[in-house]
Length: 252
Ligand code: GLC
Ligand code: MG
Image 1 (cartoon, helix red, strand yellow):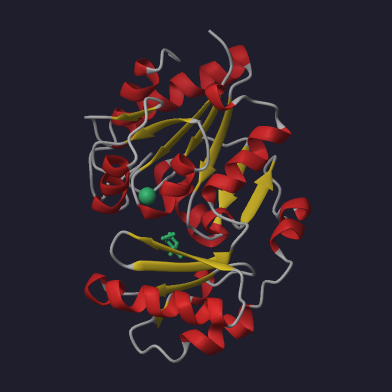
Image 2 (image 1 turned 30 degrees about the horizontal axis):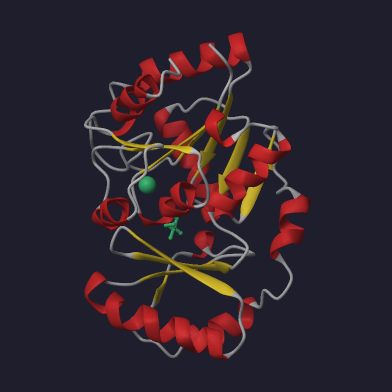
């Protein structure tokens, strides 16, 4: 057995967001923790949540302490349990990022409803946008932001959440930043997800992917369009699907 880098989304990937059977979680936690102690495996959570909402979930679900945290859809990286985002990563995101200009444009779209204050972050502006409106609003908004030379990326997840972030940022690029920092090869890296904001984790390179059995339509459609041998679609849901995938890749 060799060490690997384990990167997982939280909501509806590692744990159920609302109600669901989290009974495979203690087993997965135990397996990962043991692997970390014996081989130096590293554990990373990559979530759309802000620090406030992450802490809520950590307490609620009794999550393992990770080696690094990727919060706010990849726009904040926290190493070794610190409360300060990694400044090297922030410096990569800042050139050309104009939060106020983004907001002055989004204000013109009544379909965009701002998410709570805690989810508005230095490098992330987030809205609720209904699925029915998304097909017309997203391309229009994208074109307008581009016309204004704003170097941003729109990430739509779960038929409701729209995040606007710097172009140099998403969960995938944040994951690769850590992978390179810790010197793990793509083949020694596992990424797990269930929804739109996880596509970047799977799309950025050749890391091994586990899509949990309860994945959302947007991710399944993308997976159908871009199938790859290094990606596994599990039958099991959440932690159960992750254990299944880790065994599939021979890592457990
Ligand atoms: C989390 C965040 C929210 C974001 C969503 C999708 O729910 O709290 O701000 O829009 O993830 O990335
Ligand atoms: Mg999720």
